Image (cartoon, rainbow, N blue to C red):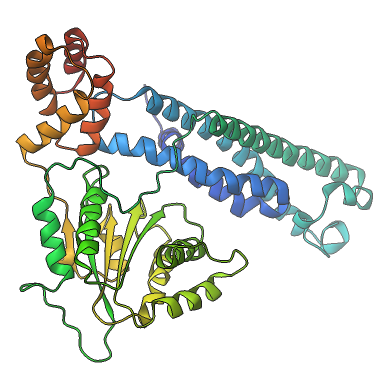
Length: 428
């Protein structure tokens, strides 16, 4: 079969649509259609966006881990995204046709254009029916019906996602805290290395002179699930024990953070132990933080959740650290990120962007078996299960996230047959 350039282009475009993040479709619909769709539909889209992002992040983490089996929850989330992508692409196509026709209409002479005095997107379509000719009026009605169809799709998607959230079928809010897990495997040498940087131990002296920034930034980066947050939690606990800083704060920053206000509010709560006044805007909150942090040696951990530093969030990221300009010299910021880009945006020198190393093979096996063999185990089977587990662990790319995912799946059924079935399902 001969494939023409045009058909190949359409096929490539179709494939791209099938792979596109649903959150990007929602963002475009908000940008293109907010005036047309009205306040209610736009607000529903804005509420939908962070929910979709959470689902995408959950699926992406397992995809990035590249394991051969997936949880039933992840399979449901992937199917949900596919359905949303199909539905919303159709709604966006309808919206695009209306927008295109609007541009054609408004380019007509004023005498034939019913919207020349006020943008039609900001008016009720029905309010201009009587001002247009019969032919144009019929078309306007069709456009109005198209907008109603898009609103109907938004309503259905919004209601469906709200129902899934109520039933606990969407990913939970994954906000982190500074408390490390009860059991940690490895990472203690890495922890001491970073603590040395924070305490200006020999080999990591800061180059701070008069008039320099009162804080410096150390970054930790690595793939999803490699142990960045756990390492930062160890450092946070270690630093807090040493009492080197006047104030220690842990702040989780999600990919969908809409404004620095949210982060400032978390920083204020971490600094004072109480939630800030809700009526403050971000500028007022920043000034309050500057006053609270002024004259104190501060240690701030920013745990970035899929904030990549090259996706339009740069200015907001930089502003997060603005209140620290008034803290005592030798204050420190520890940032975790998937990418080096976000660390550089926040001011970390490349020499202080620390990749999270792989766990040693024996340590990783201990971690994996910790998750897989928790609870009661038939002691007659333990030895065989450990042998099968050791073989499974070799195929998990030494990812703590994968160890937990697969381990928790194995823990639900500690029969030898089930473990061997999982062993056979994993790629070699």
